[in-house]
Length: 144
Length: 224
Length: 222
Image 1 (cartoon, rainbow over the protein chains, first blue to last red):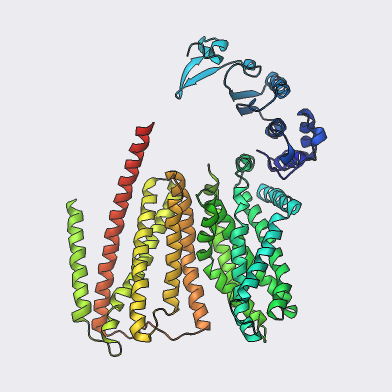
Image 2: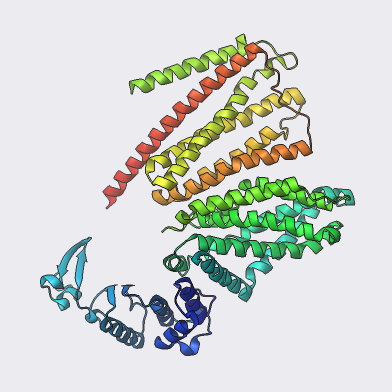
């Protein structure tokens, strides 16, 4: 969800301005550092790998310091190093009090961060850790 | 006001994107040139003939160029789903339209002003003494093209065969604009040049009506 | 069902009578004789086309504001019926023009405007065929329908003003109607307007049935 023809910094600055974030320039630079793209801030997003685009997207989502984050298969296309970075970032956000809602498939370092998990089957809840189901079982479809 | 600041941020984005590659501008200018040259083969361009047909052909060329140039407007937002990102970030979706139509009007105006000297040379029409008034006519006409073209570009992005749909939807709609702009331009290129305020008022009415309609209903076009 | 049947019967009866009146009751016109009688079809069809497009516009605005499918049905019904009447205008025009002026087509203001209108609404119908999803189709075509209808006065105004600046021989004169002619004209107009209402209603019902069928098909697939 970023503009190919703009640089990483320009993308973040644009969205920061649109979302009325205070000091958009500083915030953009800060987040670029946090996601590890500070050196590539002037490169066009068109030149980025899948993992780097993911980082830009996440940085964009964090611009206005949200209290709720929604992720759809966040680790798709990320290499192991990227997955480790994402897990660390999500852990930090979770521990800072952010509510994270994500859809995942299967077990992974990221999925195991969950404090609650729900399995859906044809639109209805099939298992819920709050109702006593086991997290590992839900993630590995053990009782499907 | 957040609408104005959002619009200017997005307008800046549109300008930055285009001036970085200049693809749209260059291809549009060349397209208009090709059309103007081709038109000249369809009649014998003596001075009086040129004066009669010239303005109409020029505006036809602008209309065709606009209907092609405006296609990527919303299509390029589909690739990376940036339109969703914009909708999530912007409280008033009209800012998106306003920014795009302002940018499109500017690009169209730039290509048209660039074409005027070429047109003047090829068709032997005097433009120098009426240049400011000509720019006014070009601006009002381009604004109409920008408003309707941007709106219809959002529409055709949802349809199949969108490359053909945009011109098909846009060109009949622009009949009044074509007539008004051609008449106003012809009056300026006449041996006794005159500024036709009746046609200019008509252009302003055209622009205001469609801008209002876009403002009232445009956000529905941006829905998923 | 019965009410519809009676209404249809009344419409057919009125149309037949007005056709008869156009040929046998209306007096002969001095210069163009038989050909002039097409005026009783040509002019009212123009007005009913506009009325149908107005109905379509109401449907379009209604859909944009309310998002209920029935407004979309009204929109498409009005547009198709309007286009049909528009086609009649464009076909009867040349039939009148050829014997009167020796040309099939005269770029006079009313005929030219109707041609542009025809193109606009053909594009509207074409747009609808290019979008599969029914909700998106309704939304997008409603928007284009609004734009098209707003363009109607602009089209007529600009072409009329343009023609005033560059006058052409006037082809269709309707000034100074003899009282009997005027009565036949109004009769024709009323019966054609009732026909339009009947057609719009039937087309609306057809669209209602179609969307029911499509909804059932989608349910069956799931």
